[in-house]
Structure formats: structure tokens, C-alpha cells
Image 1 (cartoon, rainbow, N blue to C red):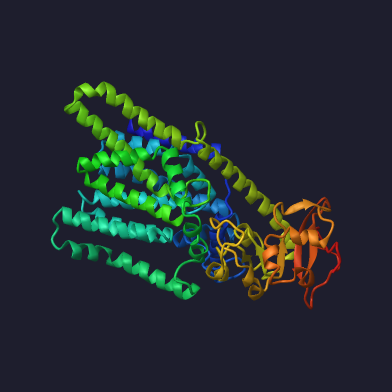
Image 2: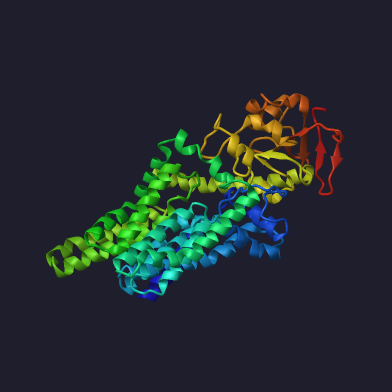
Length: 533
């Protein structure tokens, strides 16, 4: 029975991946860019050697660099999926160990793994190539190790080092690491270990020391206390105070995760210490997500770390209620059994976004498709940009992931995610702060050389009839134009496809070596300036 559940879980997850199909998110390519540069010997830098911490996933970046040593930085999404596959297995193992450590039988623990495989967001997260699924897997494994250490002391060190891995997998993982340390202290006090504070400190001294060394090293290398991504997103909670609450509410109610919170209350009454720790972390994490404002990506990225924990609480709580009824209140069995089974079935159905969805989940499905189409269009546009942007050319773009990987430009990333100047000096004028910041006044200091038009980037060859029309179709020229005279400083050019039917329009700064002469590249693209200098 247990083996059958695990096989079924693998098959369900596989069908989830097949159903999701092609998944792509531009933000994943930020980390890919750093990993690519590290793999080819340029260090952990962004785009064309820019030293800015435009990623918040140091461990994932290092892991991605390993296969890229062999691909020379090519096929980053494939490399990410290869490196993510072991974490899929780790997540299944961690959920099984977590359920077992909470006192469930083997077949119940394998049922937890099967239930989790119905979560579509996990499959999408895996296919996206982001650090999300590895982070979820390490979080589940760290808590499984902590709970297992209640009965087997050998799990203590594993829990400590797993906590370090969580902290390094994503920058906000240090909060989880801190909670795990407190959990280890609670364990020591509860088991009446001699000198619990000293024991906890000794167990975590080395992992905390490694984290401190890494933090100091990255601070010295990049020059900011936290990644620029943190500063770029810090206005969300201020300008959109209800955004985080709505985000968490949609995820918790839409996927029936509230069932885990209800089961947690029951297990608290039953004085289940393991459940108390899992539920406390889940609640604190959800509060943290409401504070930072959630995330825009269409797969519940910020809530996913607690999904395995809440799922285990749901199953463990249901099993405990059934056990109590079977021994004390047998007359309730005909009522409780179908209710518990129905609730867990609904949990599986609502986590699976292929069939019965709320409007929020339907929007997530459409969001996945839209982001994937966007990434495809950016990669196609990069073929045009490569013809005109020289190595180190300062290209202004709001698509800083794909273009960092597939062009040689030194990107000026417009959201501040990989631009410390915009991240630390910027504001939210005319933009949605869920994506980052803007800083029109920063551009004279950033000295841009190239801009591209807004989406669609590649258009019919005669899509525009004047230079002013092109300038108006470059994002933020209305605000940046207060500080840069585009008509005076830039010329409008276009890269025409070899077939002559499509073109990408761009702005290029005039300079001593600037020329409006029409030229043809080795790849057969034509670069011209249709409206003159």
C-alpha cells in the first residue's frame, strides 16, 4: 500500500508537469545570469560583468553553476530542471519523514506524499527553474529533522545544517533558520536536557558561523547589506498595505490550506509538540508574507514553503481525530470518517489547478501561460538585440532576466532588481511597486546608450512612421525625458530580420563613433536608421 502511494505520487506529479507544459518566468533568468558568469569565469556578476547582487538565492546560484560548467552557460533552464530534480525527491522524502516524526503510521505518511503531488504550484515552480521548489524541499526537510530529533538525538545536527541550507537557498530563509534554532531550544527544554541553552548554542555554532562568513563575504563583494532585490521591493507593504493580506487569503482559502490551521488547533489541544512547532512556524510565515506584500508570480511562491507543513498537519490531525473517535466516541465514526475523507479530498482537488478552480486559481493558470509567452518573445527579441548591442553596451530594459542571459549588454535594469542605484534611490512614480522601483532622476548618472521599445518588441518592419512615435513607445520616456532629451541625444534605429518582414526598434545614443550608415550583420540582419540621424 505504501509503495503504491509513492508510485502514484510520482505519476501524479509527472502528469502535473506534462499538463503545465512549457513554463518560463523572466525573473528566473536573473539567477541564471549570475550562475552563467560564475561558470565561465567572470565571477557572480550580472549581465556583462556588473557587480550587483540582483539575486537572493546564493545556494541555488552556486548549484546552477555546476552544470553550466559543462554547457558554458548555455541551456540555463534545462540546467535548472536537472538540478531541481533531486529536490523533488527530497521534498517527497521530507514530507514522509515529517509525517512519521509526527507519529503517523507508514501508510499515512505515504498518503501525505501522494496528497502533496496534487499541488500544481509545485510543478510550475519546478518547471520555472527558480529556487522555489528547492527552498520548499529544504524547509520541509529541516522541520522533519527537527521533529525527528525529539525521539532520535542523531537528527539534531542534521536539523542545524539543514537550517543553514534554507538560509542560503533564499535570503529570507534566515528567518526560518532562526525559528529552527528556537525550535531546537524548545526541544531541549521539553526533554529536560542538561544546560539546554549551551547545548543549542553548541549545535548551531558552526552553521551560524558559516552563515555569518557568507554574509560578510557577500557584503564586502557587493557593497550593500542586503540584495538589491530587497530594496527594490520594499515599498510594496507601504504603498499597497492590503496586498499581502489579499495574497495570503487567496492562497489559504483557494487551496483549502486553512484545513491545516484547523487541524493545528486540534493538535494543540491534544498537546502535540511537533504539531505546535509546525503550526507556529506556518502562522508566523504567513504573517511575514502579509507584511512584505506577497509576490506577483502566478504560483503562490511565498506561501509554498508552508504548504507541506500544513498538509501534514491536515492529515495528522484528521488521523488523530479518527483514532480518538474509534476508541472513545465510536458512535461518531459514521459521521467523522466521511467528513475527514471529504476534507482531504477537497484539499487535493483545490491544490490541483487542472480542473475545479476559483477565479484566483484561473488567473494563476492564465498568468503562467502569459509569462511563458513573454519569455519566448524576449528570447526571440534577444536575437535582434544581439546584432546591435556590443559587449558592455549599456542597454536600458525592464526585461532584465532573459536579456542578461542572451545579450552581451551591460544592462541598466529598470526595476532596480539588479541595479543598486535604482533600488536604493528610486520610488514608485507611475509604476506598480509589486514589481520594483523606478528612478527617472538616476538615468543621467547611469549614462544609458540603448533603449528598446515596449512589448511587442519585434513588430512589422514599418510599424512606426516617425522618431517621436518610437520614443513614445519606449517605456518611461515620459518621466526619464525630464532629465534626458531623447530627440537631441538619441537616434532611432531598427534591426530588420533576414526575411525583411520584422524589426525591433531601438534608441541609440549619438557619440563620436556613432554612424547612421545601413549595415548588414553576419547573421543576415540589417541595421538601419529609418528616420535619419
